[in-house]
Amino acid sequence: MIEAHELTKRYGEKVAVDHISFTIAPGSVTGFLGPNGAGKSTTMRMVVGLDRPTAGSVSVNGKPYAQHRSPLNEVGVLLDAKAVHSGRSARLHLRTMAATHGISTRRVDEVIEMTGLAGVARKRVGGFSLGMGQRLGIAAAMLGDPRTLILDEPVNGLDPEGVQWVRHLVRDLATEGRTVFLSSHLMSEMAQTADQLLVIGRGRIITAGPVQEVIDSVTGATVRVRSPRATALAELLRGDDVTITAAEPGGFELHGLTAQRIGETAAAHGIVLHELSPRSASLEEAYMSLTQGAVEYHSEPIHPQEGDLR
Ligand SMILES: Nc1ncnc2c1ncn2[C@@H]1O[C@H](COP(=O)(O)OP(=O)(O)OP(=O)(O)O)[C@@H](O)[C@H]1O
Image 1 (cartoon, rainbow, N blue to C red):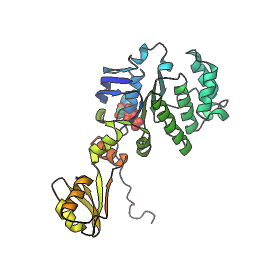
Image 2 (cartoon, rainbow, N blue to C red):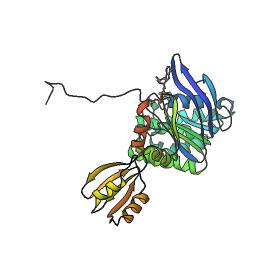
Image 3 (tube, rainbow, N blue to C red):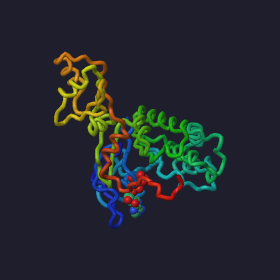
Image 4 (cartoon, rainbow, N blue to C red):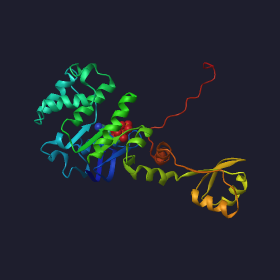
């Protein structure tokens, strides 16, 4: 369990995290989303005592991180996978960490197996690919068999097999009753992995809640309708909060009314329906709409200049 109360971090003039309060509950995977620079890493760093809050507080498993006697057994952390002594082998790195907490070398071998690092465990970490580094970071986070896991971009650099492995791993950990808090910019991955979401922008909470509720709160469902009398039905359904798109002679998409309401209206006017299918928006669509006003670093489309290659 992670509990933050009015958590705030300022770097000089810059307010990176601005009075945020949230609870990350055990037994589920909570996805932490937000545009670049939103304050995700800063928040995670404060949770594990690597940054001091300017104001407010945060506890993990009931206490501030620094007050845990055996932090590796409470909280597993993957923040910066590159922050490893590059001259050491993966096994030595993990053994050194384990030694500080009285964790057995058997457990070291177990996490090496679990993360698919057995073949490279004796190799220098400096020569690791991004994906191998991520696996080592996850192995380190798992070492103390912690009740809470905090993973910043755990699938960054992983191949598709690795991405799927992380998905199953975190889902299993949550099913065991652990608290899993992870960030990612991959919306399709987050949609498949997370139960709950915490979305921030410019250091503030934009929304929080179960994934489907967050999606529906933003976009509502769109309903696909097909009927031989589509035009007449569309006219009957028009209203202030109703948007009709993709209209064509045999059908349209409608936003603003439930499938049930549409079906009832059609029946009341004796209109035959060939299709009535609610389509939920994707998490990516909902996310883009939610964070529209909170993106600090916009990209511009590239327009070819006259005289450029054609
Ligand atoms: N040590 C620091 N000194 C000054 N400013 C910082 C420092 N660390 C972070 N910031 C600023 O705080 C803000 C939040 O940064 P943070 O890294 O927490 O965002 P993020 O949501 O993790 O972004 P990303 O998705 O790009 O990783 C940014 O504007 C960043 O430039």
